Amino acid sequence: MNALKLPFEFDVEIIKKELSQFSKTDYQDIYNSSVMLETLWLIHFIEPILGEDGLPIFLPNEALKKCPYLLSIFEKFKCPVETFRIHTLDAGATIQKHRDVGYSFEHGKVRLHIPVFTNDKVEMLVADEIIPMQEGECWYCNFHVEHEVRNNSDQPRAHIIIDCLVNDWLTGVFEEAGIVN
Image (cartoon, rainbow, N blue to C red; front, side, top):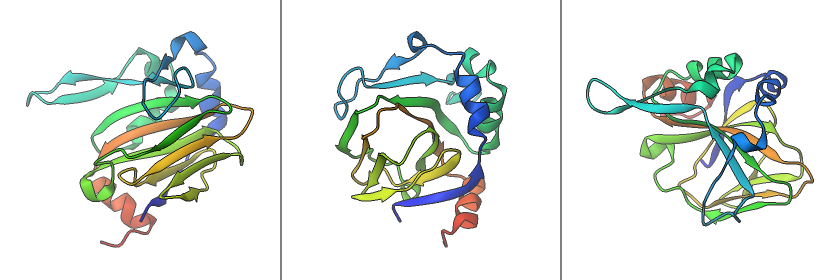
C-alpha cells in the first residue's frame, strides 16, 4: 500500500488564518538535493528536549503556542511525534523523485500530510501514482518508495507534515482507515 487517507478532517480556514500571522521571513529555505534552492520553505512547530530516559521528546515551540488550532492537531496524535511543521512549495516548483528511507508503516515511522493550500494542478506521486489529496484531509504515504511532487499551478502549495513513530494508537488509526494486520 502506497497511500491511505486517514479518518481525520481538519478545518483549513482556521489553519490558514493561524498561518497568516507568519511572514516569508519566518520560513526557512529547505536544503534538499531533490529541490531547487529557495522553492521549498518550512516553519518548525516543535522542538526537542531530553526526556528522563535521555531520549528526545518533542514539545510545542513558541510559534505553535501562537496557533491554538494547530496545537490541537498536534495533540490529537497520541503517538511519538518527531516532526510537526508546515512545508510550502512555491508555484511552478517540483520535488524530484527520491526516497525517504524508513518512512513507511512497515518500518515503524510514518510521514503524514495535511494539505492546507493545494489545487488540482498540484501532483503528489508515490510510486508513479497520483495521490488525490484535498485540503484538510490527513494522508499517509509510503515515502520509503520513490515519490515526487509537481506544483504545476501558479499558487504555492502548503502542507502540514507530521512524522510519527508507530505505536498501538497509530496502528488502531490505520486499522480504522482500512489496513488489515
